[in-house]
Length: 265
Image (cartoon, rainbow, N blue to C red; front, side):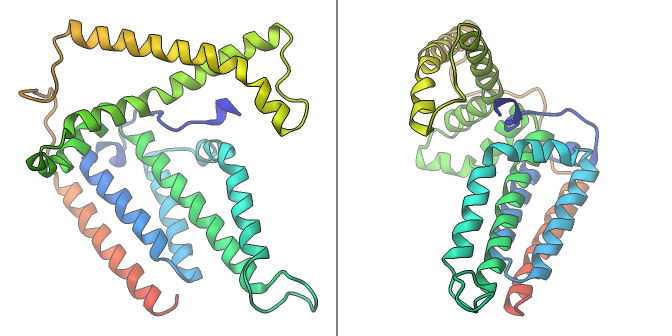
């Protein structure tokens, strides 16, 4: 299960999606999320599904990779669907049943919304390097510096946390394999027993995480890192014609989704 978590991974490529400015991709993901919550009818969801599949094809990201990353969230997705099925009032499927047609409709839409939301955020991290993501987020939040907010430090921490998710997952998998080799059992018993069995993993994992954090701090200090003040960049961010076209298309797309919602579609 741990190997299925792909959040934070970056797949280098030379596709039109990879070449976009990170600020464009961040704004586009924001528009995509808003459109997901604006969507109401089946036509809107169908458009969002085709849009997601088209972006996957253009960025050359395999749908299997996206679905692999969805496995750890499968329990939450199924639970959300079941709650919508059993707790939505409406016309019963059969007389005497608590399951309604409206509940099935809401459940399928909610499952699609969560799945597309996760897929969209995965596509952002898959096609954008952590450094580019940090620079783009910092540039977008730069107006907040006038309020004396440490924008650079905040974006750096977010980027580092995202970057080290795969590393911590790999470390956890190694610790679990070592514990299993010593006779530990993580799969039998009820939920409480399984949770207790995971306790021996937490201590070495926290020790490893703090050791990595200390090594990273020493590496940054040895390179004279002192925050964002006066910091220069090797690659300067610049909006291209493709970025402007994507942003305009995103605004038109969001407007169209709002109109579809008003039409009940």
